[in-house]
Length: 265
Image (tube, rainbow, N blue to C red; front, side, top):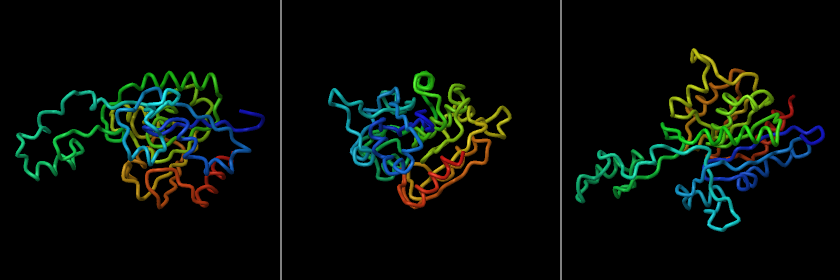
């Protein structure tokens, strides 16, 4: 990195982009700026179709309608959302759908209670699509902007960071630490298999210190899913639990632990 600085690759969450993630991590980066150069990149896929008001308020992204804006991005897309029509089973039998069926549709995340199917979010998808574009982008990023000493990712970006460390030599060979916020083990069996060694007992990521940050009020990613992602890391991973939800905590105890973790050599 810049003279004596550590270089950290930062991977944003689903429907975020480099610019919005830079803003969301401002407070946790502040007391590391003299020692660390943070490099933010945009994911290769558009997530515009998934973008909603909750994303706008929570993530600070705009829908990208303005020409000069990147808009919401994704590291991979969900194959479940390709189908034009929901599977027959999820279509209401007729307009007189009972409340029970409606409730079941809504709770199964296949519908909004009006027979309209809600799109599957990354943490729920068993069919990852478009990883090749991300792999290529991250390899090019490592060559052009690396070598990187660390990676930092949020949500889909945290899972992406783990997959990249397991599969991309240009990152694996130089990265010494990972900071993963609200990360989850993908439900796609092929992706999950990449995070384990051949006998599935150990993690595929070796020689990387990892700090896994999870909020007890996170409604997108359970602690169980966060711990499953920890299993990808062969070196003893550390869990930092906080009171918040699906996001990057900016409390003083967390900022201090992060600084120690990143700079501990």
